Image (tube, rainbow, N blue to C red; front, side):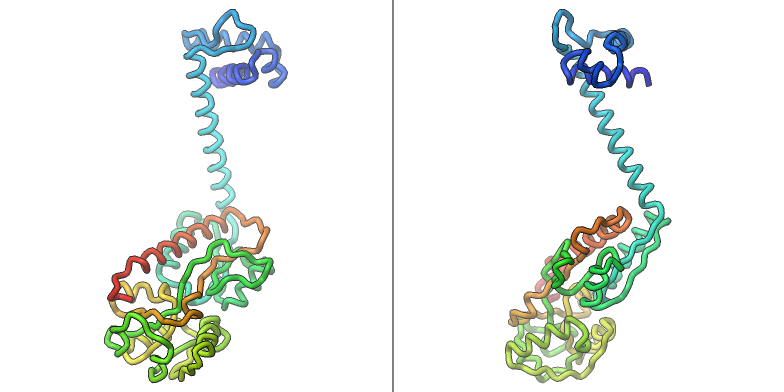
Length: 310
């Protein structure tokens, strides 16, 4: 500890140029600073300050000593910051709102890994649609949310938005599976499944229908992404979903995702949202970062999919 204090005196004297200036900065007598630096030189067995100068000039050994001190102080600050961070995330609550579409195995893995790393944290996941999620974020009912859209509320900001077009999802044996791209008119004779009008996906498809003057006849209306996906897996069914929902099935070859010519379906995004200006607690921030990484990883997997898988 004595060496650390003496290094501090040397560093301040060198930084400020004189022992008197260091004395005023540290509120310690100039003679005391001089004695401690002399004691440090004796301890290290080397001159640290060139003699015969009005302003302090460090020797090469003195420069090395001050560089060591700066590095040690930076490491200590980093350690204390990390320690405080761990203390802050030891206990607490994290609240988030997401649509069912986001609840994939990869999402759950991210969630479970976070809880494993921070066992004292309690996580609450609210299942809600895009509009309700945005309202929950606006009212500070949750720390952050995931929506299939960009935020419309000026007090809610998108921390991250990723392009995620709606695709035509079919079984590999379906008659459309060999197409790389289709238009909505190609779907008019198909058995189609979609969620009801309260879901943003259905609202977007409706706008797309109006744009092309096409009316899709629905065989199945279901507010469950699992039911919609299973309908496509049954070989005869068609649904329109973002690819990340069915990523595992695409990678395994159980489903195909077909692009469309429709500009509305191709412009859709997913967003991670927070209230503008809100200070997110460190625990919630850490989970938010983990989910951001999960989403980016999912998008990277989609980009890497072979042409025949999409």
